[in-house]
Length: 463
Image (cartoon, rainbow, N blue to C red; front, side, top):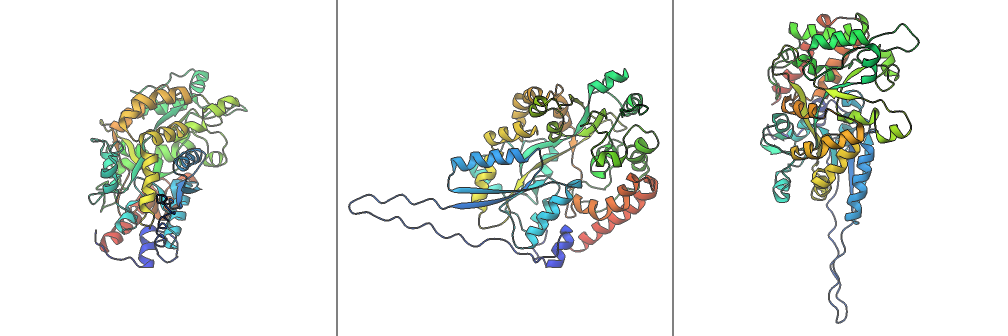
């Protein structure tokens, strides 16, 4: 990647963000005052500098309690540090969060710490807006979050030879299911060796919308981000390369066939999934006990069966299985790292202190316990996390997540972020039309392909 400075217009084209000027936040910190010597007394110890860290955080009902607990613990250990957590809900595909983050960078108010998914920080690093973490990692010995042999984590934390993301979780997704709805319909529970045909048959057998209480077999995802799993299960992918792609390949017949089924037919033709209007308003969902299956990740635990929900009698008891086998015998599952990065500000060293606490063993246990998310260290997953989610959330098949990580591959990583593809092309030209039943997958995917290709061509033309 070249080291060109970025104009305001070029920066906003790269990130798809606001129109404010690009400046990095902060002024040099004032030095600590020199110690004063008393008459005949030893010099007083220098006062610790008061430090305020702005943490722009991925914030929803799952993560916010964890940020609050981690911040409270860290400031108790470091009384001179104040952490201002600014949580922003993720929105559709992360759109709301990343739009707000882009505005901060472009407006000259970059936070000292920022949440990132493993496919979104690369355009910032390419323009030298993030601090490389390699020296910090080496000095601290914090290597647990970077396990060998998990390629999806490697490519979602490193770019051009440097680490930029400290994972707080190893992320992957599997099928959530509600045993009660299977039992009501007299349908066998899914198992890790099921197939795509099994999935569709179970969804159809469970669905019953004839009475006052509607029961659906499946809750559709409603966006490309979640349908990427179904696409990869066919044995093809939307790009020539998943890291720094040059060619879009959305218009392959295998992709059109599976997207047609999981994004539209399950709703409008088969009728086994609730309408988007229902799920948008929170009706007839898995959280309300009206849908039997949904593709989700550990962050979803707290919406179904947490201690707080059980205390109020509002829990939905559930378990998980691997996603069903499709055409690809390797059975890939989506996987990535998700955590925090340190923008280049005058507080980078201090920011690393809090970041390394969150990503270290003690902080990561707290984060994982509160959110249910998978720890960032493989050694913690089976010894700590799998038993913990069984006790806290009722998940009996935690091994499905471990296997999904082993089979994981990333969505897409490069100078054109996945969120930008979604916001500018894939959603308005593709999935919006599928969701409102105004066009088929065969209709929209060639248009989507052309639009994403234009983004890639423009990016590469400027490298």
